[in-house]
Length: 584
Ligand code: BDP
Image 1: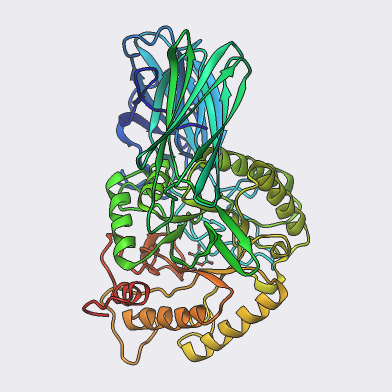
Image 2 (image 1 turned 90 degrees about the horizontal axis):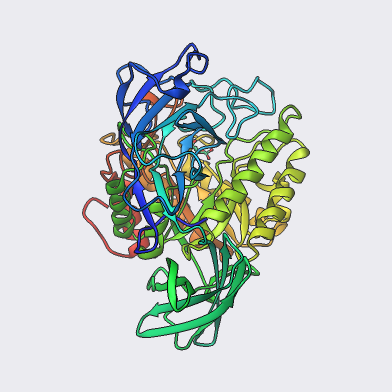
């Protein structure tokens, strides 16, 4: 799925801004005809979550209604016009000029509609109904009835199976875009390295099978390689060879620009340009190899979370977060626990970050009721995520889920299904499941990389880092003996109240967090099969309310929610860059 772009042959406009908004706690909007437009709304910012924009609606999860009006730009009559949503959490239903376009389930992933038959030159009315209630047959699930095997039930308000606030609303830009009727529909780029050559395979999907020429030009680093092929079918394959290629890596995130054009009579009628990083990713024995060289991932599990805007896109926060990750010496992160914005992914390519790209499947449980529906949704998420992110050199692994409650036998078949699906869609990248179970996680039998979350010295062995670290070390060796694959510790950390100090270190103090992370990293560095260390979390973030979450926040950030470093941030910088800083 291509992100809309503007060039002389196609155009995209952003409908972000202040829209009209109404809460609908009685769920009366549909029968009252709000799909044809409503009155009495108040202004709301799009994109952003609704929860913190108003006085007293924080815990309200829907339904709610959005509307805006737009005119088409000049010259769009001869074009096919699409309406595209980057992310609406959780359920979106959309009407244009009173015509129902359809619905989409699940946040964090884009969806679009061909609106050509329904759009007018001017005075268009777009209405969106959003609903984010938590339910056991949704993914991620919520309001799950208690059961001894699923210990999360009823511990949070709102009653999530996961540990972050279930923000709702239109979270990413809403775009209108126009393309020719005969257009480039999709591009899939796969790269290989042969000695010093880069091999770039491009698969082009067209909307129409009609005679044309497809031109592929790859430019950058003093090279230009071109292929021109006859294109009469709906797909075209091109192979471009770049001699003496500048490969993509975190140290040198070299990108080429691929320009693809459809031409007739020597003239281009559609064009799409895509950044391309030439790199390979592979698992070999205990190692994770980028361009044939072993990787050590250093970085974080994170969240898209910021005051007021909630889970809405804030470009300045993205820039700041990358600046802080560079400063601290991180080279990697996981999109815990859902796909991040397309803007975040673009900058990962440009700045050289290695991304474990995770679907929104967090807090899964495997009781029979609703299981088939949850599996179908997870399949949809895998398809949508790979369609969206397959061309990013920064994406080195797909994560199918975070911390599933896999104790029931159904879990293994569930993940085998998703693993096979991911591999069939993208055979080039490793696939994993991030688990808290350790040795009893049966999905580790077929996953390419073992990803484990651990909190010894925090949730267990409270205040006892010696004991906790011994347990960690022993468990890692045992896990590796059972599953001899590369292992990433995808979460470890301690809640830390900024300004709280203790010597000797005590839980919740800045010293305890710094000490715990240091001790964990020493252990991880001593195990040759450990290929990654992701601290939980980069920043403090909003959660529901529970006895574990003071003021409705998870304080495991090494930066505060407004991005100020705690003591541990300085310590990590020393460990990851070898450079000392004050306070570390
Ligand atoms: C892990 C979860 C993560 C939580 C973290 C914690 O994967 O979402 O926020 O624990 O408890 O279990 O801080």
